Image (cartoon, rainbow, N blue to C red):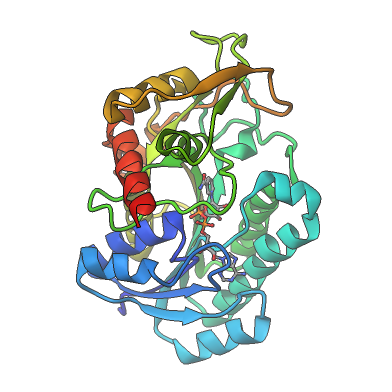
Length: 341
Ligand SMILES: NC(=O)c1ccc[n+]([C@@H]2O[C@H](COP(=O)([O-])OP(=O)(O)OC[C@H]3O[C@@H](n4cnc5c(N)ncnc54)[C@H](O)[C@@H]3O)[C@@H](O)[C@H]2O)c1
């Protein structure tokens, strides 16, 4: 069987790290990316790490005809890992149709092609955002999906439903939805990492950009939550660990180890860290003092979310290995490299 895998959004943050792990495991990778949130220079980083250049096709997956042409050309694709999406929560509130078109329209186009192909393996980037504020911690995959707080969150919920419904009537299609907790960090080589455009939406790039002096101050939204130190708790997972989970998920489908043709796995470390713990970790590994202040609570913030990882550990045979300090250290090395250019 061919080992050719389509990675949509393969030049983005999680996609690029996954391409590296796929190539390390002997897969042949074809990346499709429109560079809307990435740069072609990421390819150089991938080559520097793996010594192999993936095939790269630059086009916008919202162009249905181009998606059709792509599958006509690459008839030997055996798996698709679908990262390409828009991911800024605030922007999704401002421009919901962009999010529904890019995150759901494209998903439909890909599934239309795959269901025509016959046998196909599909991995979908979902998110712990589907759980909202879960009633029980750690969060298992069986926790109820809560009403989405934003159009972005809704695209992940509806995306999962679209895949589930499609799998139900297409037994030859095998799919896994991976619900990521909070991916952070960069590759140890410092050749690839996260490249947020504009003001970072996530905590860790905001911390490293503040540490390097690009942002003046970090606001910690609320220190009076019912947690150990009053700040919100998340499950931060090193992006390389996350990338490896995609290879494990793909292998599961290719080797037909899957129990049903649509499965869901949480991807996290199982450990929650508070905002202040993340700041402390940053200060420890960087030797820098971070300029931050406590600000009022922010609307819509979940108080605590961390994964029950047993299903991924036991069924997928994958476990996150890196500590928060290791992930923070890699994020800091990456920030220093990016800003020194
Ligand atoms: N980073 C996170 O915190 C996080 C958490 C949970 C889920 N996710 C999901 O994981 C996936 C990858 O996230 P990321 O952080 O790597 O994002 P990213 O923005 O770094 O990567 C997405 C890539 O897709 C490309 N892209 C977007 N729309 C496209 C289109 N129409 N055609 C072709 N290419 C397109 C972008 O140029 C970019 O390179 C997304 O689906 C995201 O929603 C991310």
